[in-house]
Amino acid sequence: MEFTDQLQRTIILDQAPARIVSLVPSQTELLHSLGLGERVVGITKFCIHPQEWFRSKARVGGTKNVHLDQVRALQPDLIIANKEENTQADIEALMEEFPVWVSDIHSLEDALGMIAGIGALTQTMAKAVAMIAEIEGDFAALQPLGGVRTAYFIWREPWMVAGNDTFIHQMLERCGFVNAYSHVPRYPDISLKQLSTTGCELILLSSEPYPFKEKHIAELQEVLPAANIQLVDGEYFSWYGSRLKGAPAYFSGLIASLREAGFQ
Image (cartoon, rainbow, N blue to C red; front, side, top):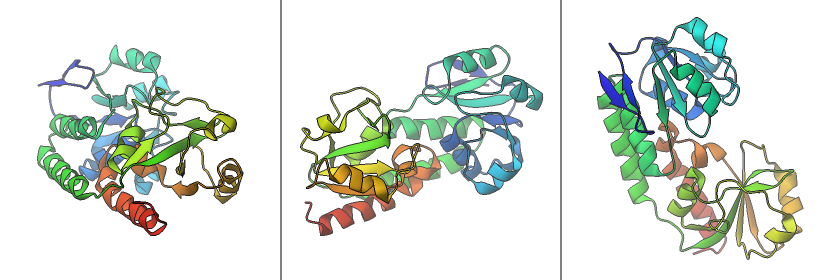
């Protein structure tokens, strides 16, 4: 059986994979949602969903520092990876020994294509198709705001925001938020002095990878006293597997609260 990953590489499997290692947290959660259970034998230390897998599955290091010897010991017949979240060196080393399917996610359409691809790989296509239809329908029903100038923070010291060519940027657009850093690629470092010149009406502080808290709202409020500053669940903005099933409802709640605060 031949499959094509999102880097346009061909993956050949002799049979349905029975020993899968996932190196991407959001895709690990997807594998669980597709009902793969015991067929997943290894995950990373950042694959926190579902909790029962986090507690019981073998861990093979982090997304950026995969322990190759631990992966080899699990004798996988399929490895699921991602171009951004994993390192090229780790993935190329594993490709020499195992079938590795690599996702490359920049948009909702890419994410839905990934779900379909993994459904085909694991012979769970019916579940994948149903999931895609649910996600598409819920996003189609989302009622975005009219264009609120926004900065989305992912890190502190240095301060880092989501720029263009990111999945987060795409989710911001779906909500009707205008990314103040859409002119900058990836995840740029910025200064708070520079932030004060952007005219941001809304600042979103993500729960991950940096765990922003209430105290950081006050810190940024000094720079932009008129801005609305919110703590948000970063998984709904950046996880591109089955977590997307809950994203439109979460975004709708956020949008409703902003409308109550006067945004249109």
